[in-house]
Length: 189
Ligand SMILES: C[S@@+](CC[C@H](N)C(=O)[O-])C[C@H]1O[C@@H](n2cnc3c(N)ncnc32)[C@H](O)[C@@H]1O
Image (cartoon, rainbow, N blue to C red):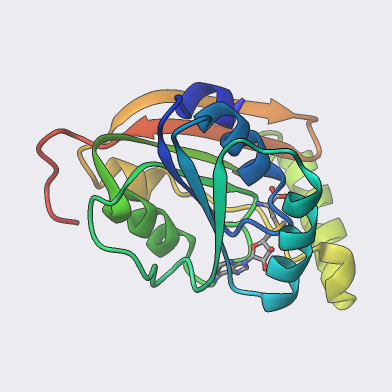
């Protein structure tokens, strides 16, 4: 959904916290033939797996790989047409900072697509999720580094135009999909 709503042929795309490039590969197919995708991840091992996976795909679009921190993106302001983050804001120590970095590196009029774990609405489900998350975090690999976050206040702090804000998933583990567009005359954030 995130890729469908954001990427167009010819786009320069950033997949931030790309992991094994599942989202990056979908974006590359959509940006073909003249676009390109940069997959960034903090973890060299993830990038190594992503490289192998991409090499097995017959892609008409270039995919580049970079090791880096989403909270300090190594790119100039207004560089990409699209920035994507699927489940990679959740493990950040400062998810809001990560979103503002995505906003910074996208061109005016460019699009940002996010998917992340959200908090259940019903109090009982919140209580249950917290219990399960706490137990999962006793063995960090079980948690997959994921926790519920809320980056809407950070987005509202910018002058972005909201295109989609939708809660999906199941009551115990809801996810949020957000698509927004950078203003043509962005305020400094
Ligand atoms: C749950 S995985 C999601 C991977 C991929 N986007 C997907 O949808 O399959 C989270 C990824 O975020 C990466 N990550 C965690 N902290 C990061 C940071 N500060 N900067 C960049 N990547 C980070 C992890 O290494 C991991 O590959």
